Image (cartoon, rainbow, N blue to C red; front, side, top):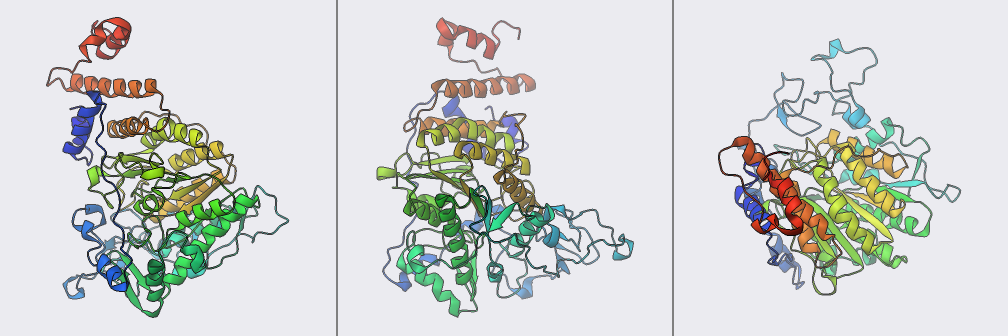
Length: 556
């Protein structure tokens, strides 16, 4: 098939991609709709909730990228190392000064200066130049802050929301391998903002507050909120195998939700143009009655509800986290006032959380208002994401015409992330933000989700923040997707054309592009007879297209 060469150098599932490519190149029109609904709690008591979490984390055995952190490892079976990399959490021997995985220095200043901290520090402290910051990961600098919002500020200001108490959400006891969702993520992002000069009067900070129980129950069940609140009396516990909590986690979750609600209200009122909620714990996996995937409360969903309650008629949530936002989709799957769009690694359902197939489109009145673009493998980069924006997301968003857009801004699809395995760059995130900025005339709320390489999330968050503050990244040089990216976008177009106006010529062009790629690959390797287009194209109006794509004349 057309994807054979790609499979030899990228992490792809041959069966998944091969079947999709066969259906698309062959022009299959019928797409079998799958049941992509997520499991729901029955709400019959705390025992039911407890039993619902007993098997959470079963995905760990199938998802290789998430296998490193395991809360059940017996300390006696672990060979202790001297230091863990601040940037990627990889373990290193004491006599090594640069992380063997990512190259970060043992005494990196990334928590203070984010991605602008130097990487090329010498092997010993005695060789450092005078004045070089070598505070190391043991030093936890206080969070820098822009001025707080006031009524005298110009209405085009960009707001940020965060609270140092969110850093208290952490593992209660040190584990053999640090959890990827850690407080240092927030330190590195804010350190990068400060070092890049973004806090020097160019934005404001929304005062923090805790979300009320009434607000949290806009999107969550009473039982779910009670379960999260109950953790305040426990030094350490967890929801399933992957979502730790301590006695401060419920507070951190309330502060995260409160920041998202308040920034959204400020945007709707015109007090600020847009904002970035730098919050943790993240939220897009949190379902109506279930915490999972490092998430306790669904911050983006709460922001969407706040927008609707404050006067917005329609809200779009664009989720570019590498994992599908199953919680957000479940909360709004029957609501036509919220358009949920997700680009995520899927691998035929083998990548966590397993939801997000292209055929998951919503239910009832919300059918057609869930748009999924599932990548069939890792290695997906800027060109694929921008190609999806141009051909799927923007055409649908223009027809939906939202009053405000929320970005579920996870940065684990970034190059270097230890869990995502994709290749999106800070410039790629900037381009995507710019496309949404132009569409929405700036009315955007970005909500931090995942992302576990500190340099990647710091650089990517800064790139997004600069666009929110009015800086343009320019025009992308190339929109040529990879073959797996083209397959995913074409599949999404064919599914969504049932609900939205998708230019049939764009679909035809992608089909021809995919078929042409197959011809070029097979012609290059010369091992098999080249595939031809439909024979009936050789006559009538498509003859020129056939001759061009399949080179029947022998020249190009």
